[in-house]
Image (cartoon, rainbow, N blue to C red):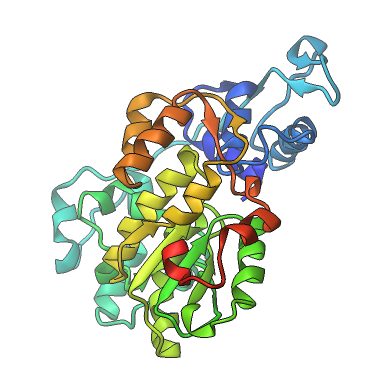
Length: 350
């Protein structure tokens, strides 16, 4: 997801027509841990602002007073969402709902609800036992748009239990698969969040002298891990190589820890073992130079660090509450290699 995409998502949730650009910039920073401190951040934000304008999602300031010229390139101080043309709403015709959607007959539905539910009603009327297929394919079939049902699991009718994705849409999510590599026969998998740390660990583990000690290595790719982790079940089955331990090594920051907790819950629901912290690697990371970032509220931090073992959780909380974080890149390949002893059992070191 690009900075412009994250900004567009933030805009879609706003009710005011005028939006401060600082708020949009904050939305762009979320999900990309490298952007806030990147020397190219200002250019990336400027490019994203003009991309939003090209998409027709914002109007940029017309006069110089609406721009910040303190550095290059200039950035807008605010943006405006285009006014939507007024349309005359017509009350939808009364509909005979199929039995699976009968609760809708007593509800006050919007025109948008009717646009969503009409094709679903027809599907259940004509093919109530239709094969369950990937959500994007069903979306294209029913609405002519593969992205129409994107995010449907957050729709109020779904969260209230009135509309069910597999039962009513006859569909299932199809997230991008977790990138995972079978480096040896051991029954464990280590998932690494960032590409540099993944590359370093792959080099170390692929040359480990006792191959029987090595298992799977996965690449989490940040927030994508939450959706992709359940796909590991299929890979384990296809290779007839299941795991008994599932470890995660991510950044020691609020995003990495919250991602870990959510991925753990999603993985357990799919039948995977609990997602545990790679405490050996985290102990090594905690000895490395810190980075400073904006502080996070303590209540949010306490919940996030609860994924870690108690002793480590308190140490990490003390760092994060001061605005200190540790990125995986702080543990480079030579230091990482020195931390792992080829003459000792591998898994306890992770």
